[in-house]
Amino acid sequence: MKYVSKNIVYVGVNDREIDLFEGQYPVPDGISYNSYMILDETIAVMDSVDAAKTKEWLSNIEEALGGRKPDFLVVQHMEPDHSASIAAFVNKYDSVTIVGNARTFAMISQFFPELNLMNTLEVKDGEQLKLGVHTLQFVFAPMVHWPEVMMVYELSEKVLFSADGFGKFGAWEEGSTEDWADEAGRYYIGIVGKYGAQVQNVLKKAASLDVKTICPLHGPVLSENLEYYLRLYDLWSSYQPQKSGVCICYASVYGHTGEAARLLAEKLKERGTLVVCHDLNRGDWSKAVADAFCYDRLVLASITYNGEIFPSMKGFLGALTERGYRGRKVAFIENGTWAPVAYKVMASCVEKWKDITLAENHVTIRSAINEAVRAQLDTLAEELSE
Image (cartoon, rainbow, N blue to C red; front, side, top):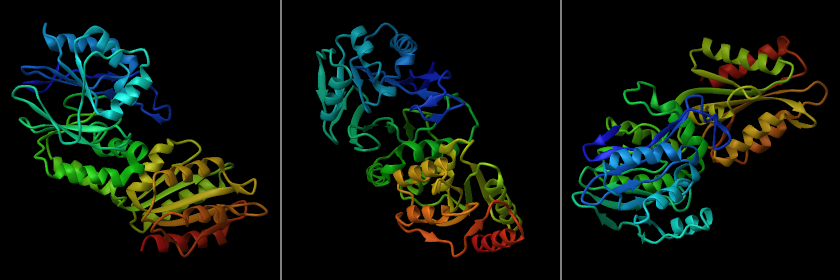
C-alpha cells in the first residue's frame, strides 16, 4: 500500500491493459486511476476509478479501512475514468455521504439513473468540510476540463487534490525516475489544452494556498520542486513555447515530401537548431500536437490531395485549431505533381490562429526533390534558424 502521508493513503490502481486512453491517446505505459483515503475521526475517500478496475479499487479501499467504514466519498470529477465505480462503492457502503457540487449531482443522475443516493452533501466554492484534524476546502475549477470539476485543498497537511490537473500518462510506480514533463505535457495539451484561460484562473486560486503536495487523478504524487510543475503549467496554459526549436510535421504518400521534411531537419541541425520531426501518417499524432506546442517554430509539410491536403495533415491542423494553437512562427512545404495547392490550403487555416507569424519563405515540390527544391530548403532553413 502506498502512503502520501501517515494519514493519507493511496488506494488507486494502475491499468496496464489499456491501449488507448479516452479512445484516442496511445498509452504504451498504461495509465493510473488515482484515488486517496484520508483517515481521521471521519474517513473521506477522494474519487473512484474506471469500471475496468472497480474490483481492485474496492479491495484497496477495504484493506486501507482496516475494519472501519468510510464516511464520505468526495467526487472531484465525473468523467467515467474517475466516477464509474461510484455505484459499486455506494452499494457496498450504503451509509456513505457523497460530496459534490450541484453539477456533480446532475451528472451522477445522468450516469447512474437507477442509483438512489441516500446521503449527499452539496458544497459551494470555498466551503470547508472538517474531518477531524483534517479539513477539506473546495476549490472549484470549472472547465478544467469539465464544468463540474473541483479541486480540494487539505489545510492541515497542505495537500492539493488537483483533479485532472498535473496528471500524466503512464502507470504510477513509486521511485520511478521517468521524466515527468514529456507525458504530462502530452496529457495536458491533448486533454486540457483548449482550456488555458480556465487553467490560468485556477493557478491564481492555487497561488493563495500554501501547497506542499499535489495529488492528481493520474500519474505520480508530486511533493518536491513544485515550482517546476507550476511553472510548466503556467507556460502551457498561457500558450507559451517551452523550448526554442523547430517542430516539423509531414504528411507524405510516396516519400518525396517526407524526404524534404527530413532534409530540412538536417539543414536546421547543421545550423545548431533543435529539431523534432513527426510523420503524421505513422506516428502518434498526440505527440506531434504536444511538440507543436512545445517548440516556438512549426513546419507543416503536405502533399496536395484531391485539391486539398492529405487527411492526416487536415486532422492535425484540426487538432491544433481545437486546442487554440497560437503565438508561433509557421512555415510550409507543399508538394503537387500538376496543381500544388497544399500551401494555400494550409496557410488559409493557419491564418485564422492567433498571434501567428508566417515564414517569408515556403517550399514547393513538383513531384520529387531537385536542386531547385534543395535551394528552397536552404533558404527556409536559414530563415528558421535565425
